[in-house]
Length: 478
Image 1 (cartoon, rainbow, N blue to C red):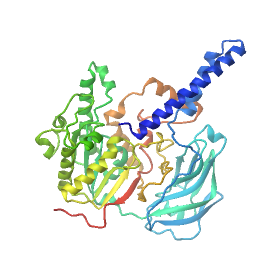
Image 2 (cartoon, helix red, strand yellow):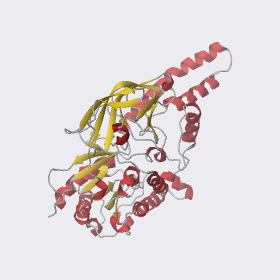
Image 3 (cartoon, rainbow, N blue to C red):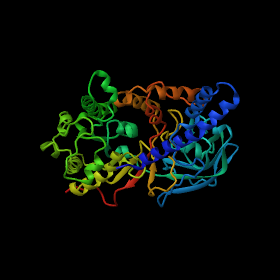
Image 4 (cartoon, rainbow, N blue to C red):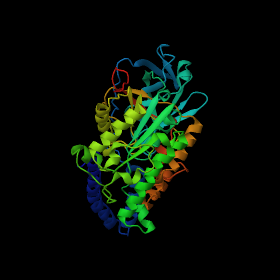
């Protein structure tokens, strides 16, 4: 079944082919009338321009407003930007407001068509940078979490580079408890999802458990260089990523006794959900027994009895883990925002497991490691804040929680990502050339600590979660 993300990519590639079909005769005509062999030069220049400024997968107009709605009770404070300083209309920012987002209308300058527009946020002690799309014009949401004292004292500075900020703004203030002080369960569809989204959170949690749903064995072509065929390469990758899902959390202080690898197969969860009793083996490794990567699990699970990769076994395993770890807070992918098929099914599996287990967590914290329509979000270099992602249709009215990561935690997060085998795959030549071109012509920068783009996207000043209360009832057991 083709996903929405795949449809968008297919349409994007079709449009690029149409542009090429139209442009090629024009270039040939220019070459003919120029009277010299200019076609190779024109083609080279066109390719360089494409890689520098048009290679982003951006499936929406950057001139569109971001659309968000928030739950009742969120504090909304009007304000203005005066001489680059944020001034609120009154002093109503509560002392316990921990997460702040500033709604501001941003318009890119002519330079912002070629260089990434961004906003510099300065509280007098630290400088944050939050980037947006080139050629933007519309409402955007800056993350000011952690800067509440500067906001109250009127010393928070905002300055646009390659863009202009409208003077009228609105500040949304959210109040949250510290969810790290509660029993926490992170549900990761694949190894590294927990670290990408929530390393800072789980590394300081009072009591955390991490449950990884799949081996993540597909797309193992790089392992074929070791002389393995496709199936053997997929099996090796599945074993390595399964090991990572159990071992890497120890770097964040989560003991192996609270980490579980369920061993289901990548990109099969949607098919499993459609036919709950049927077994769905790996698409690439040829394996059909989930027990091959469960030998290091700290506890026995219902699926260990037969090793069948079925939806019923997945739900049964999750139900058993809910009863065992009794989490008050569950951290998992946002089902409406994150497009990966396995990420979407994680919420459905949790819903069914709650019904089967009798244990109901109080809150879900939702994260997005991928987007449907922007592959670069969070935009800008590593270390910057996380502005709200593009959204042209409003999401469910969830709250927001965006804890700040100290420098030492970000350093540990980098190392946690560096331990993930899947994030160490060398970049293909085309992507390496694209980065060089964008570095020279578009001013983009990537961190030196790792080639994968997640080292840029995930190691940030903040982590970001959508807060969805499970119900008004307290967690309970059978």
